[in-house]
Length: 84
Length: 217
Image (tube, rainbow over all chains, first blue to last red; front, side, top):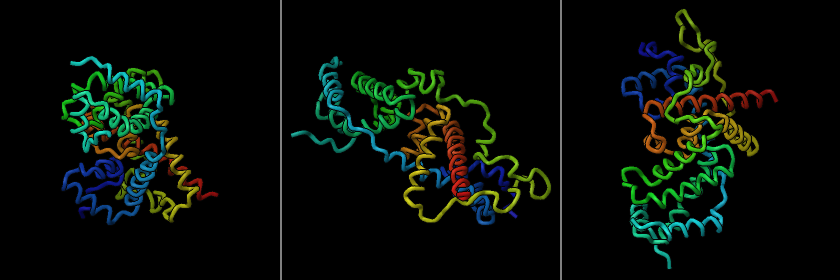
């Protein structure tokens, strides 16, 4: 019944809002009910979740620490800053 | 013996008092974050390093303007973003992050093509058939596949339009909250969400293509 109020083509536009809990409580329960009955929307949501999970691994890519020359230059600038 | 600053408030107080230890700890705490973010905002690593150095100089000049209404992290990235925009971000176009380029209808649909949905009849607006949405390999990924998928995301994220890339970087790569991203990039809540959704849609589509290719192997 309620399931009819959610079109799959609408849900896919709302996945990010849904994941951010920004859809409102009524809409959210309609979506939850829809997801229980719609394996395709559930799969679409799973793809988004997996995308986010994999993206999170990119932050672990290490970048070099501050090199000593730049560090000393910045420290000098800090030391010499005009006092307000 | 150097002083320990337990949190950002203590750090800011130390900076304002001109304590060098505070500045050293500020660099230790946030330099890598700024470099990671800058590399996704501008075209080359060299430019990124310059933008980060400019950001630190701006921080030195402006620490007294930090009011503590935002977090130190979002304040720093806000300064970084302004430096990056003044460099033309990626490709010399002066694109304010708040602008929404075009109406990317397919990306608004999460990147799912319109022809995957029935357009009329009792199932109008619903998926055209069971199994339309690919189930990505859910089994524990071997290391090679995992590394390849991370590489797919890296490449797809790099190809996003500036504003989408900025939001996707902070939200999904760095794991920031929407409030932090809104603050750092000066966006409205609605724009932030649209940009994130479109960015995710494109990256998801790239992963979907990769997954389809794996199946054919």
